[in-house]
Amino acid sequence: MSILVLGGAGYVGSHTVDHLCNMDYDVVVADNLATGHREAVNDKAKFYQGDIRDKEFLIKLFQNEDITDVIHFAAFSVVPESMKDPLKYFDNNTYGMISLLEVMKDFGVSHIIFSSTAATYGEPKHIPIKETDPTIPTNPYGESKLAMEKIMHWSDVAYGIKFVALRYFNVAGAKSDGTIGEDHNPETHLIPVVLQTAAGQRDTLTIFGDDYDTKDGTNVRDYVHVEDLAEAHRLAMEYLRSGNDSNIFNLGSSNGFSNKEILEAAREVTGKEIPAKMGPRRLGDPSTLIADSSKAREVLNWKPQYDDVHTVIKDAWNFKTKHMNGYTK
Image (cartoon, rainbow, N blue to C red; front, side):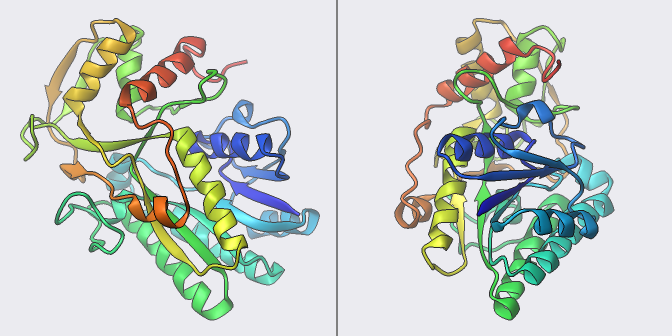
């Protein structure tokens, strides 16, 4: 019996694979390596290279492996790109989910853990955000993830495929020993961009917008450590294995940090000056996203270990200093 991790060579996926392998689960990884890195996959996991939209690839994989649970990370996730090319996101994300569920149905696999996002909420009505709050995405990325959640819901109603959607907020950090971490090209996430600037690989950090309705005018986000996310995916899988019904959970630290506060924390952690300038707002960016993750803590017994943003940045900096140019052999 194996756990299939789709997108398991990506940032959150590779940390989840590592976590599962270190707890002696049998893990199978499938990734098309469009944005993932083969080097990030734990050697204990069995690896297949292929695309979630390729049903023949999925069918052969399910024929070869005794899959009992699926953890789905195989989605594009860059907000500005989704604004410029929405059809790319609906093709890969939404159609990819349909392809996967069709194969799961045919092979009688009835558990899926889905890497969703706080972008499903759009501009929140109040802070912190609860799972019961309205879902009105402000970008195609969030819209595609919300569509994926709805497709899973109706697949549960029709076919009994149980799901957990984990709506997480801003992911950051790395494995504490620096062996795996965040490596995107191009990089758009704030903390790794800040650290690229600290490392001298960018001349200046650009903060997009200083006229938001926040404490210092810059975006406020809830940062959750990637290792805590990995643990949450395992707990969600065991939740379904215990016979529980489909569910949705927010995952976050429940603390909000502005872009300027992240910059100052990074300066403290790295000891670097990190030059910065202000730029215009990016399309589709909500001003504030902070999670109410009490439901995950109560139902899944999720206990984040890394709530301090300085620890998050320290672990990310450790990976950065050991992989200045990312995963390269």
